[in-house]
Length: 227
Image (cartoon, one colour):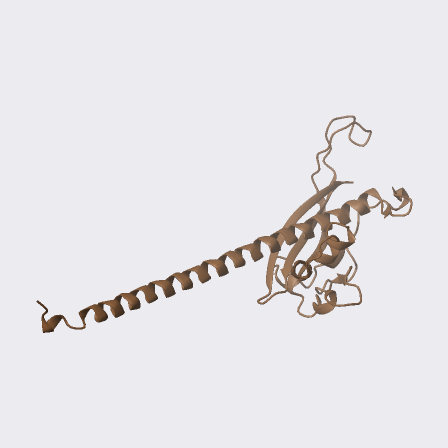
């Protein structure tokens, strides 16, 4: 026997369940989109961190090349007559960078390291009125890989564009005399296994993601070379 009070109940229940399921589905979509965005942000930061590490490596390499003698790409030997402990430039550093591998065409010149000098301005802890540097360079990370024949095989345009938006920059200052401990025997070391004469350099490195928004990761390292 049917009761008049039960008429339309199934329809109302169906609508309530449909609404509940729609809300649950919408919530899951929002949560999934948030997780995806969070993962993308984490990946972007991690990649920028790796680029910042490249900046330190290149800066340390610059100092070592001066110390060991500049590398001659034609003879594949070092010019030992130019070995030196690099000195700071005479002018106070204002944050400008030398563009090393930008080239003359897009996309490498879409970023200007000297516009806001973001790498230099990201560091604190030194007196900007007296601060001097040995060198300051800005590189495009993607082009560095292409020039090194690491990434020339990439045919995917999106992958190339992804790498091209990364830049790394470094500037180096000669800190001064510092303790150095090395091994070996020499008259200078008094025929002992250790010496304490050294010259310290601080390398400031930045990884820069020129996407939206711009992301900068900063790192520092200290290099001590024997005098």
